[in-house]
Length: 132
Image (cartoon, rainbow, N blue to C red; front, side, top):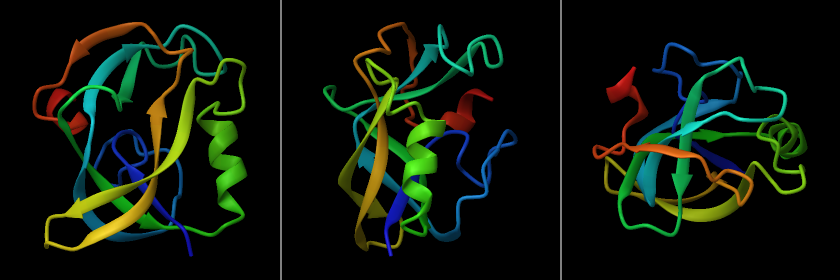
């Protein structure tokens, strides 16, 4: 069964949790800097002024939640995260997640794609919940 790391609206402890993902396996961190990014196009433009975006190319750590999901959910999540857009809004990659209990799990995460270049503000804590 695939695992998914959610760092923003997919997290169950975030007020705007908007997608029934799956069974939570707990919280952890991935390598990459979390940013507040401006939502400038696509189906969510105008709905959320800013949203979380994970930049894989910059040092930092981002806090989030790992979910056990079904294989059939991946194409739907790709559409939701606009990973199939040209250029992709987000892209999915398999990474190591260091869980708070010490385990290391392999999970998919959505990084901000090349179509997402409107970085607004770095989130030093790496936790989206800190800015809500």
